[in-house]
Length: 396
Image (cartoon, rainbow, N blue to C red; front, side, top):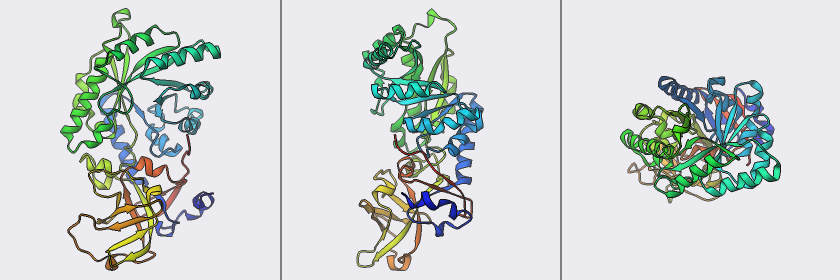
């Protein structure tokens, strides 16, 4: 068992320098400011909001993202995340969850059971998904259609049907004709927005998202029901920060929903977009210096690939030392991280900076993957004193 799971409560009221390493540290003031900012943007725009719970995967953070019930629906990438959020249904602040992976047969029995307590919507991007739902309806005796979103690919090339493909029109028609599915709307994720470096670039990605879902909606027979409202769910953390720019361009028959997941935490990928600053990163990894190598001007820390992931961005390295940004994790193996100056022109000597036993905090490249490596989150105040410990949902 992870040591933190056995002992985390014993560190309440203590400095992060007392924590076992490696450890994941969350600045609660920073996290709450990040959440407050996006919720304020959503309120100002008077649009619907669906937070994605994939980043910090915990009941405490999800409750804050929902603003204690002001917003009442989430998107989740795993069944484990849905199960973890179920106490919020009992609290009366969560009503609906979109399962954010294109549907596959083996998960339907689990989602059916969960749907007894919470509205579950599904994601489709292929006519075969309609076959799966119809076959499941016949084999299980299910009569009610599943609420579904069609996922549209607007450039990220991860999941979704391309707006220029004839398959999109066929899929819309197939869903509309099926008794096993009821179309709620269209969903897209501009994952390639993480390559943006300016607000204008983020606006262009958001414009592509908006154009994609609006184009998809035109395949609906809106004249059949003049009062019909269709949800278009767009967003990612970078584009969520610029959604105001395109709000007025949405056709009246569409209801705009914003989704975002990483925004409470942020990370170096977000910083590299230029849309958030270093102080807005709520997540750090506490590591310990295990050795120092003056001959190559490097140091060893006990946070490697498993703790940090091998994600990268325009920010060099796999993470860098908070307060000493010239020093980054330049190489890694499974449990070893190598601190070096990388491309920095500043020629500090490692022996003047680090000693064995020093505790360092590292900003990570991708907080979603990094957080998934840890069994406990140590939640600190402005003085880096542990005030709470949160246990995230683990597994699939």
